[in-house]
Length: 295
Length: 131
Image (tube, rainbow over all chains, first blue to last red; front, side, top):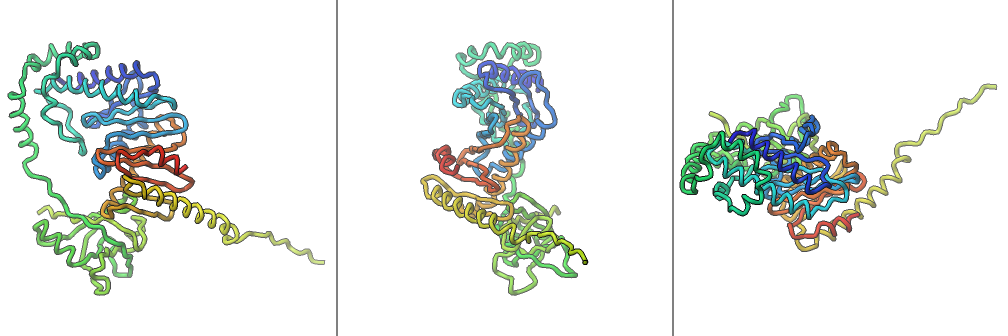
């Protein structure tokens, strides 16, 4: 099954949801590959694209709370409800008095069911590539779904079935036993190396300046750099990534703290110019990660 | 007789800013006391109170401070973008739910507040207490 069919099915699902919940003014689905599927004839304008991109960024940052499941924005003229379904996000603009529990129930049933149906139909075809924070799709999703669910979704599925007859000759017969080994092989091919878990540390900012100071070089305790290099099994750490409280980030070269009186205090000494760029003040906390040298 | 040039009476910066500064200080103190009360509730993990030039953070796990600060800034940015796109007007509050935790974000005056809590905590009552 190709992506067009997938998109068409989701589009139909959004139209159906809108029919059931008249409180929805606009809706789109942000697919796991970054594609935006709009509900009806609505145009995906640049502002929608910007909103989708900021949502993707939020989804990445939300890993600290276990990933983004739901987002509700309550404004004085309406609401926006974002819900995560199988790594995709349905985004719905609602009227102020929208019945949120009802909408949650409807979207919580229709979208996952459709996605299950699509996955079971297209289990042998390539699904859209997941974006960075997308959760792993469990094997259970590839199991054929119960016949009652298929009957319930018959109306929405019509278009998908037509396309399926042409493109996918025998997908529903696939058993779990047939699918699992393939999925395992794919997983092995896609991730040959385990991701390196980079150590990071929160350090207190100390500004320093002077005529001979290079703006691109920060100073950190010898012990910290030593620990990182032994953890990462590299000769020396030459660069670090610095992330500020307000989300600004930069990469700098790193050296050992040259002045003894600043050693062992958990400080990162950052040149004034860089501090200004990052809008940092003395005493603020930053997160510092070592950069693994490529060679 | 020489005419005396009238010197316009200009208020110094200090005179202009004195009263608002006190008000702001009182407002921050009020907010912090409300937030400290809220933080004492079961399931509330902490809060971040940010103004244009200052921030107060009280999070149970200090190693998460930056993650949470970055997340709340990103949530506000994303909410503003979605609000503009869909014409929501002024945002009264935002709720971000993750798998493990949820966050209530709201703006009071120039202060941006993020309250971090477990998922079973009633964020509506926190919102009511804050506003």
